[in-house]
Amino acid sequence: MFETLLLILLIIAAWFWQDSIAKREIAIQFGRELANRCQLQLLDETVACNMIRLGRDCRGHAQLLRLYEFEVSANGADRMQCNLQLLGKQLQTWHIPPYAQPIQ
Image (tube, rainbow, N blue to C red; front, side, top):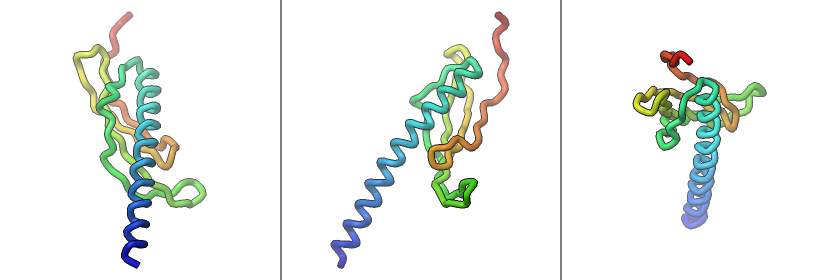
């Protein structure tokens, strides 16, 4: 009985680890797209999951809601803190603070 419970816990932990890696890659992709739209550079090594909780999608199904924080830069010297929320694989909300764009 103990061995079965331990095996189930290990399988759940492995699934969660794999799922977290896949969702981080999705967050990096969304962060890069958002940064490009704002003419910013995503500092992709800064993408980190800061919160995980349960959320509900539009159909009422429970999914993991993850908050990712990341940094972007306008010129390589400055850094701005940003965030985005993923519910499952879907982008829910995002925030990039206002900044002064260079005049071209």
